[in-house]
Amino acid sequence: MGQRLKKGLLLLVYSAGCGLMLTVFTIVKSPANLLFSLLAILIAIHYFKLFSSLRSRIAFVVLAILGFLFFVLVYAVITAARNGTVGA
Image (tube, rainbow, N blue to C red; front, side, top):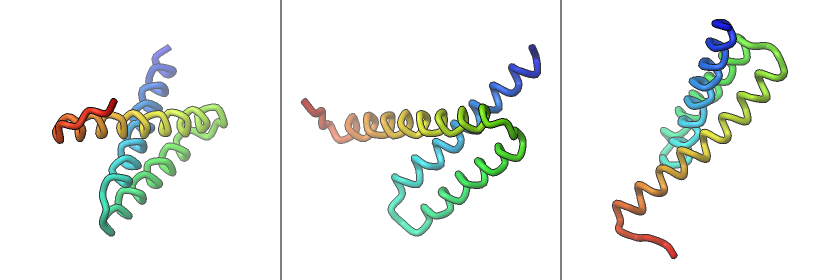
């Protein structure tokens, strides 16, 4: 049971990190955003080296995309709250 828990937590941490890097990549509008895309790729490569099963890799990609969408939504809500604009 301990090994499955460790594997699941690593999946969540790596996919959240990748999703966060992709979110920052879309927010930053300078050549520095290339750094964040490279970090996302390096996180994915490192995870794929650790876990070679197809199931783990598919779960990583799906959770990274969901994490990306979650972080973008949080950023949009914070930006709208700061600007005082609430869409109808």
